[in-house]
Length: 200
Length: 302
Image (tube, rainbow over all chains, first blue to last red; front, side, top):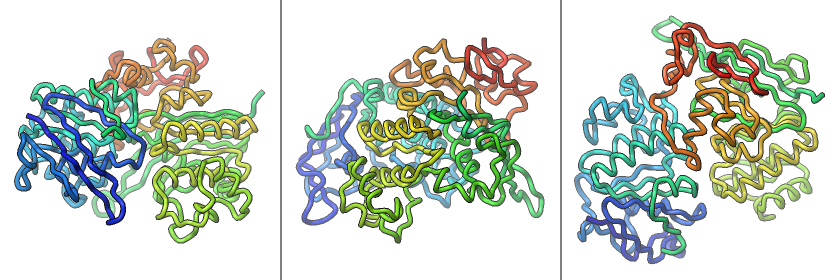
């Protein structure tokens, strides 16, 4: 299985394109780090790969077919700002089980406490919310994960904890991973292949 | 001897909240916190997310919400820091680089928010590679990194005696972040004290003199920045866990989570996750001790 973006063009206004003919492919089981200066379009590309944004032209292929528009998307995005990716009016238990029903061992591996399931997002810190966002995308149906700066807002211990789980699950289930990051050291730790955004 | 610009002793901070009906309860978010920062020094404050780092900054400035209950001492050049003092000094001698870029006034051009003196604005913007035209723009026209640089300029525009920088670098490239750090160093060399709150341990170790490690609202260790070169030079198990978790070191996780405010353990706050934990640790919180030139709160440090 592989995910492939072919000749993606995207811009927020008519005159200027942020992405102009970008192509990128990731195999399942592969881990790729995407690096580049801020504002170059890394997050925009991430959203297109996960089907959250529709490109002006170009297509994202999953398994040589265009990304499905309905139902569970096999490519899941973990967003840079967890507070923007969670429904503020839902308790976190509902947010989590909307995707799938993880067991207790899985939750404790991610450091999620049972009591948090009955809380609203405003009652948790950014790091705590991010754990839910990660647990949520690790449903058995997920084949690819796009991780957009998922750990910049966390302390290093929590960062290591979260990546430990992500990498373990990715290996077990042969999930492909594209990680966007500013940190060269982190990229070297988590991904064997490094892609400069400018080279796409 | 160097003069302590600010000394915080046994600070505790709780929020008083209504639980059910008229029943009030206090949610303790900072307990027995000690830090001091002196003229010419950069003290980095590192530690877990949600450990009360920003609240400390707000307590020093006196801008906490009304339901905050503070106990303990804050001394400014040896004198108690009162609300009257704070009001008089903040924005002048006592400045903040806020964590969120939403602290800029959306209706005022950014140049005026930095300083009314155009020459000062020009000088600072030049230093942070901000275009001359930026001064005439409104906050919504700036990118995250640009807003960050405007906030740093504003906090350093006068002659502050204490600059509190609350996560000043996210969104900045490494080059710009280093640039800001060098500016803080320069301010410190001219006699200011700098309190640098950050997650970026690597940057903190390179530019700060000392590092205070926070966990669940208390200081577990205050170490010299150079101690972070070697795991064994650190004194507290949590500081060592931070060291081991850095991507350039071992990238090793530690199981568990920080205890939630309102359900703190009786003894040492790190005890539930600590490999060295003994019954003594669970009974009462350890006192701060001086070991190998650094302060640490742990029964097992030596």
